[in-house]
Image (cartoon, rainbow, N blue to C red; front, side, top):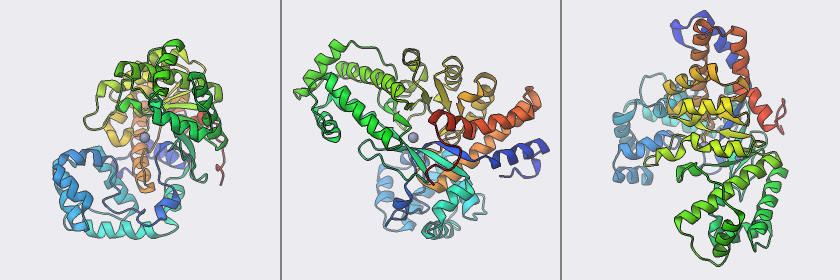
Length: 431
Ligand SMILES: [Zn+2]
């Protein structure tokens, strides 16, 4: 990591300390090594697009999106991407990729153009075929020990050299639909006849995940509904669940009651079984209802399940101050910067600037890549390190933080807090 001529001595010292840290990626969607090297699984300039894809989808027309997706040639794809870049290349979502191109693929230019994209694309494809590349990027370039990997509840395995599983259980909120009940019954080999036997089946599934190494469960239901969950009586939910078992469809307010009950149940059970409960908060996708994901909705759940460790995602952006205050007032909550640096570098700096004054160091998780390709983990991590260094320099120079405390804070945020929260060993996990 370098900051060019302008970097002062303190900046360079802190940057060097940060580069030495063996990072834990606190929230990952990374492709397995096996699928990366499977036919069609490797990267190119176009499938490497991470969250810029969300902006891209509405920067060009639906026909152009279809052309891009169905294209048989890279030239066709470039034609569409060029238009999207013309309209929105300023965003951090895109600059994420320039950081990756420069750091990993020898890209020297300021921007992607008609004259340079082809060579870059060839370079990405060629590197991605090298059997050592995947490992090299993650372990040598990123210095990542492990990642907390989002896995499918019906296929929760992962490669222990690179990740530990966090099981994404939000599909379980569909247990007010009969087909999901049948699926869970089959998956857990259970007879589900009432709410109690449903809970027993879910507990069996959770224990099975733990046996396979899972350290957390995760839900991103805030993409489609509010994070405000209200306590429900067992009698009410039992009555609703009996309707589900008969194949009846619940009306929307009743679905919400069922889901609210289940989230409370999951929060308590996760605490009992020693699984961290990760929750998506903040930033939505295009057309998502932003207020749904306000982390302040979670206060009643946090106060209820006090023995449960919650890991609250994405700095709750744009409610980053509120999110920080949750991290300050609720000792069972950690606040995570996962996804944040590619959402907004300046938003990340402002968030860290405030949190470092507000939230005890042990409750901040400083990095979660939230991407699918190792190459994009690299780019995101570079942005994270840059932002963190910038903010720590400011804290040392202006806000009475000692340099020693700054280094300690960086090490906690990028590594130690994750080891403690998820109960990971200091050395390589499974390697
Ligand atoms: Zn994610």
